[in-house]
Image 1: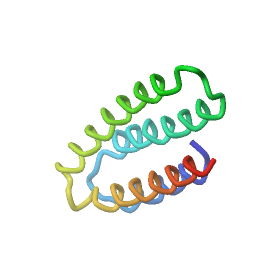
Image 2: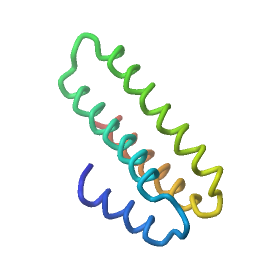
Image 3: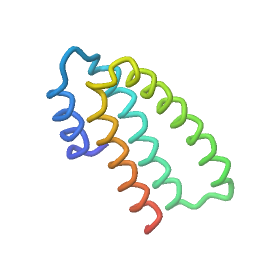
Length: 99
C-alpha cells in the first residue's frame, strides 16, 4: 500500500469515534494489497492468470465481508470509511483495466 493510501485511510479513521481502527485498517489494507498484487500478476501475465485472480478474489471477498460485518455493527461511524474504500477500489479498478 502506498503512503498516500495509508494517509487517506488514517485520516478517515482519525475522525471516527469509538471504533476499532486496527481491525478496519487491517482489513482495508488486505483489500488494497490484494488489488496491488493482482495488478502485478497481470503485468507478469502468467498462463494461470485466471486461476490466480480467482484465488485473490476469494481473499478479497472474505475481507470485504468481514469489513461489512464490522460496518454493520458501527453503521454511522463506518459509513465514511466504507465510502472511501469503495471509491478507492473503483479508482484502482479503473486504473487496473486501463493498464
